[in-house]
Length: 399
Image (cartoon, rainbow, N blue to C red):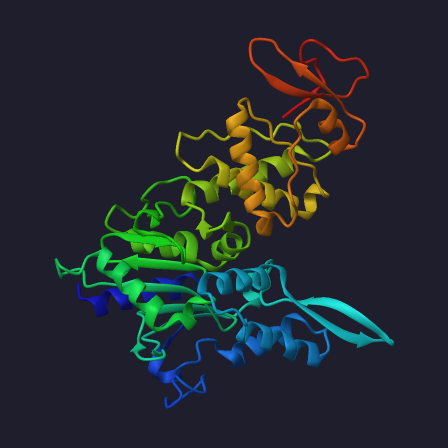
């Protein structure tokens, strides 16, 4: 199989899961159906404008125009900082103001419909030429959602022993230097040589590019070990999966060095299954037991917990829940609090750490009485009774 054949195979899989496929030169400024004014333009502004108008009919036209301008020109020179700002706009909407009934109103312009997949424009473009300050490059495949280039795939010739998946990774590093504009709005990077297929974020080093090994979250390598790219396309780039992934599984951490982290397949599906169980258990006739997720050391428990917290906090079925995280070691408690604090973009709230039972009572503020239970293991019980108990009584909510 040649690189071109691999590209065509990938485009076929993308078409299967719901993307329209367009050949890049056809939409070029000098192509038969141009959608760009010049080769430096990476956002398909016509498609983006149409999506903004369709998704925000109640917002005045001037405010919608302002939102478009904010996205096209982020006004931030540093690439990763600009990418962070774009992700905020993508997930929460673009803040705008306008006059209505003699008052200044604040609102958010949606760039994506997160609930109705078909309400968005899904486009896969191959050989999309981009002009940088000094070079013109042509990534293999770019995925656009409502005209926004969110995913970039770089492929290498499967038959060339010297063009493995890491050559594709090196190519991405060259692109970052030579055509940085396309990475301001990028959410996921994919590299493949036909055998291996790995995905990472804008700040991921080679070690952080990981395989996506499932489609449904149950069966590993369902298409076989040598079909990693198709598994990745069907398992995370399919529109329904991708919307969920971009909304809840992309994190930025800044403790002096800004990093962008994206979840692995095990974290993605663990959270999706857990959310379904928790929502079912919390219903009036539910059993109030959400279940247990098992993890091994180094598997990314902190990110899983953070993504779960963000997902459950924003689910309308949960009615604005309070989340309490309990750990049995001071060092682990500090580590978890650090991860949650750094991920406040995703959580949309600043977490608070309770160091005593009195602080916990005050923070919860819901009339629960805290008692430290010390049977054979240490746990923190939130008791609904007025009298503390030396052990966890029935009816106690155990977190």
